[in-house]
Length: 116
Length: 165
Image 1 (cartoon, rainbow over the protein chains, first blue to last red):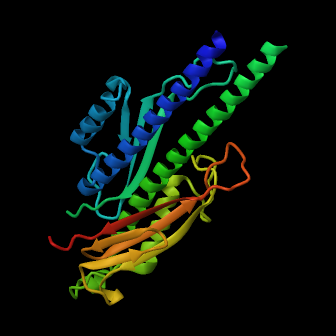
Image 2 (image 1 turned 30 degrees about the horizontal axis):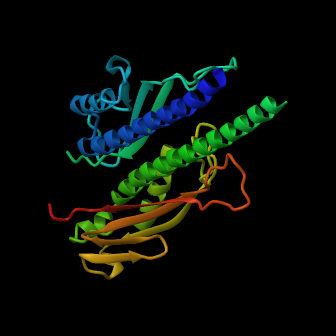
Image 3 (image 1 turned 120 degrees about the horizontal axis):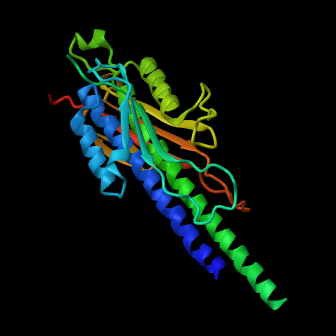
């Protein structure tokens, strides 16, 4: 019975983990491209991405969005954007003592388009 | 004994299908990473406008600076070294190859809108202004070895400069 349960659950866990990971990457890229226009990550952009991720089931209080600058940077200066969100368990039964990844992590870097 | 054989068979099928699923998911993860990085890289490359030419009213992209910036942005976003091989922190498993890097601007002797066609990479698009087109690829992830090797993951990206403003 436990084997049947494992065979059913493991692919589901893997698939959900993969979908959430891809979504965090997609939102990181989206946020970065929007940040390039403004020259920084604005609070409204952060709110939008948190809203997107919350709709996927992430706890909004645990989503961490940071960037390399809090002030507007000029054209051709780099902006780095980071998103961390809590990760689901990868395995329904963990037979190993290895540490599982605790976060989905997205990082993207772009040059600012902003002209003062 | 009969039960053990059946159990072993079920386990074998399960492990094979699980690995196949993981391999497909890994392919999609890497494809997403490449596509996002390529989008950001062509964006940054398109900012390398020749200021001297711009003073004369021409939008010309500096090819050397654009290619250098394109590579730099790929390296930062994909965790690659100077030769575009993954460093310790990269999510990729193999090197990235720049298959194509094309700059279309006033120095190319074309007028916009321009129909850009690249049959080899499956790109056909009306280009409205100065643009950068890039295609990059990396090897297909392999969790299950097969006799037939899979095609590499190849992604295109196009960045057009809007000259209407």
